[in-house]
Image (tube, rainbow over all chains, first blue to last red):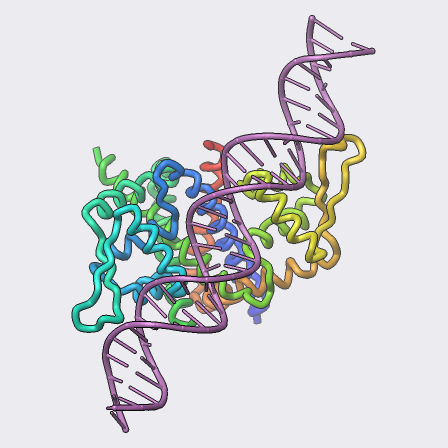
Length: 151
Length: 151
DNA sequence: TGGACATCGTTAGCATAGCTAACGATCTCG
DNA sequence: CGAGATCGTTAGCTATGCTAACGATGTCCA
């Protein structure tokens, strides 16, 4: 019955979310000029810090990126002293990525700085709006996960 | 009183939205391998189509990008026959960007293809969830706009 | 009116991030 | 032991972002 309308709504919403994501990241990129920690590096470092020692392939998969791309991201992080490469004892093909102490510190600081502008905007919201946005964020996360598993 | 908690919540939410935006865009990028219309081009083309003839500088500002970057994006679109550069009669420093008929067609097709995966995931949501997500999207848009004006 | 300053878009040059193709090293399994 | 699979890297391409510098054009004031 209203499936056409439903389809239109879904497309419009998808479009809006897409556009919002683009503009959000463009804004936040500016915010860490000083930090020298780009979005992909921040995201990968986050996995290394919270996900424990992890292989490069796992990291690439987690970040939805091909191995050569992750090789370079990890090399960048390594040159900055934020992670360490270590060979696996058992399987010598594997490279395990460890976060250094400095990596952990920088992650926290960088994350905060990067999202600071957004966080300040969020703080201005009313309680109801905050709750609504939290709900939306949760739904968005689930949506993205469902896309990932479909793929 | 609960300002500390409030601050923590805002930071966590900002972080979640940041992460969601990164992963969403990484997913959608895959979806238009065939289209050869990247996110920045799609977004700029959209402004040209819906915003009428627009100068390069306006386009750069709208897309939160520096003029040299927009010069190249427009050059790419022009080489694909999607937009046309035209000099302004009055002020010869200005370059007006016009979308071509082909540009309009490709925009619609590209947008749909790019967000198709997301739209299909959205279609599976229940009515309540859809409404919540729409509300979240609206709030997110307002948040981003408020960040833009602050900057 | 003429010259100083401002504005616009481009070019040049650099860094990052994404990809595919190809390779060497290593592991696994028949 | 040898064939094939898996892992990470290298090489090389494209696109996007930036700053610095420049030429062309407008504007404004002395």
